[in-house]
Image 1 (cartoon, rainbow, N blue to C red):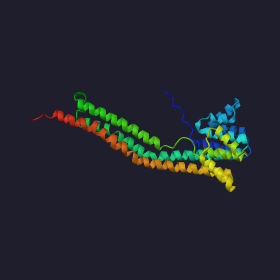
Image 2: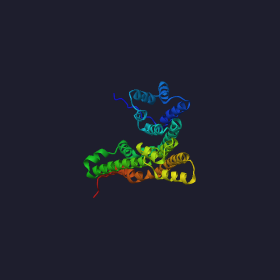
Image 3: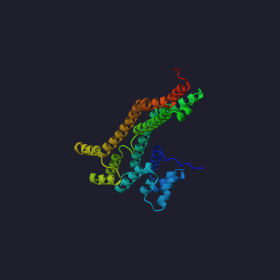
Image 4: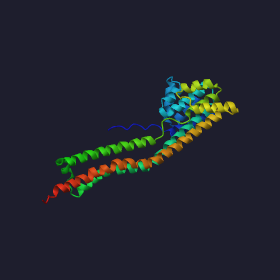
Length: 293
């Protein structure tokens, strides 16, 4: 019997663990003890981190080994530890980013559930038409093997069904949120600056973490310099706004998908219905009807 692979941890589950970790750190518990407390409470990721650090791995590397979802946490931990930024506050910011990213994914999933289920149901209509013809006594299968037009209709109908399936899958994939966490680069920049790093040093740390500096971050830093406002707060506000925009954009993409799914229905599914269900029945009737000369 084939074993099912365990599901990857969601960003929301990771955010819950990170928030618990931040609370423990804020209470004065050392990072190593905080991970051990979480592992003792049954957290599998924390247990893995404890095992890897006990084997000699650095904490950021041990966190990153937990999976792609945990990579932002590892990056924030690495930046905070390098510059001496408050670790609890840094983890809280990353936890909020993870939770917002998961909420955007959940919003799109909920919005897509009904139109995608409807499109998949309609995609089976051509095969339902074939079964209905057989139930009514039409020799559709015989027509396919005895008449070239019947065989051509079936082949064309199957191609239309395949095109509808791929078209629908492409539209659904385009409606999904892009990978990554919006505003993560600004959050990492804020963590570095909160630890007292200079802007060039903070930029180097963010690049080392794998996040490319964005134009919006440069604009925020320029605003902070000219207005004399705290750059950390401005960066975190910008990151929160980026995540909000990502959620709104995800809902809009899902709403537009409802109407776009009508395109493969009209262009591919309905012709497949006619070619697979109606055409063989008509050819069967014509073949069974004698011509009166």
